[in-house]
Length: 54
Image (tube, rainbow, N blue to C red):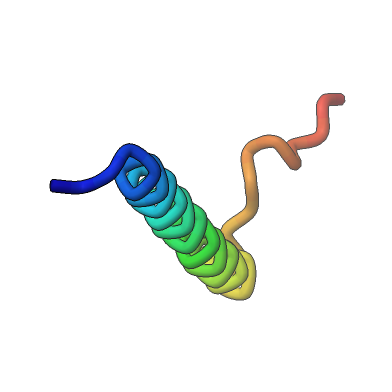
């Protein structure tokens, strides 16, 4: 049977791994989105927010 301290340490470990996984997923997605945006801009596609208002 696990002691109380081991249970707490395991819970913190699982939480830390979950947060690390989410952070890694966000960083990888950010890189992919930047790459996709750069590709679109290289092909001449512009953002709607860049439209100039007369």
